[in-house]
Image (cartoon, rainbow, N blue to C red; front, side, top):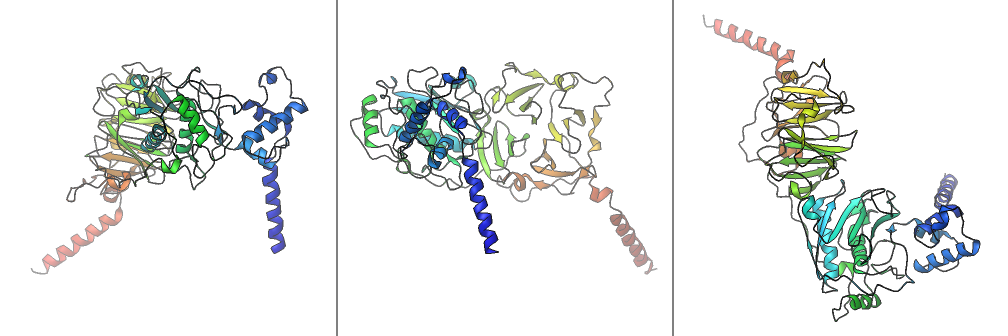
Length: 528
């Protein structure tokens, strides 16, 4: 047994080493990516000579603080594939001679990754800018507003993926995780983060679960927009690769920064000393009287009530609470009091908001350019002009169709072709009585991450049995049981479904009633 285990461990070690091995062509591509080899050679099929290739490896090893050998050893290969900044490694170039001319700057976060909390990201960005405020006379303020208002921000922060109108293309997890421009460059004052990365939000520069620390990366990228280049010091916040553990801004780099932004002093500045971390308060979100709409996308569930929302992830952890819809969903009209309905259109990978007789398409958390300022007519969904609002929209896993509810009627559409043509022989709308036990008018309906269908009404919810075509319980549950908000006050009367399967379809109840009736008659007759 011990020999078998040893053999398996040896095989695993060999597999791991071979998986890391890069051939000459792969190594050259990565060296070109970070400008160690001229990328223009790739266009006309010219490979680096042996001397050029060896020198490129030596330059990389010098920048990465490795033993300079010119050989592509394991440590060098590891550096080539580790998560890092997308800027080229220009450590031998002189630092920028001029910094930013403004001293008071605003920053705006244009787009967030689905899998992360808005508040976590905003907290991290505020802490990252605070790091540099302690070292310079610069002052940074977050700008919050809709898409047009955010365009006024001096510094633009965007989470994106793949090609994103920038030459530094993101490559999903690992590789390039972020990049920024120097002062004076085209698209200066822009910071781009890869939305496909697994981000962590500790404010000490380190993570325990293998995720990439956003705070560490943000501090680094802000350093670039201030004018700092990459460092060869592996302990510096300006080191191109993002490892774990504390990092600092060494004295020589502070001296460079002080020339750009004179502050008159050099201080000891590390990531975990720059911010005071305080535990976040426990969730204090009271449940609203009702939920207007529910959206499930990327394993996140968003609950909307009036003009604010909160969200939970697939593990039931609250990721956002009591947040204005305008602080996240950029492009929604400001004259609305509530979201009527919302759902995720899978074929187009867009979020669809229904507000009155209009709907709005969103790509991620920003309004899609094809949506006019006043929205599009809900008649695009084959609804008659007499429909003034949509109560709920949900995708039903049972038949992979989307359902739209308005009042006591519902329509069924196929998301694959919904905006192309409306069927002339449609048997819809149909009466909601088909969905037995559902309380009308519906406040919200959605299919959960675990593919179960729920209906919401007046602070309560019912789960639906797809096979029985009926709600699963007579007594509904409080929305606090599902959505992690604080429960309603005690004594709230729960509505009773009058068409529950427990009442209409259970023969045992009928038999019990007959038995009770029989013995009651016998008891009464015994007195005569």
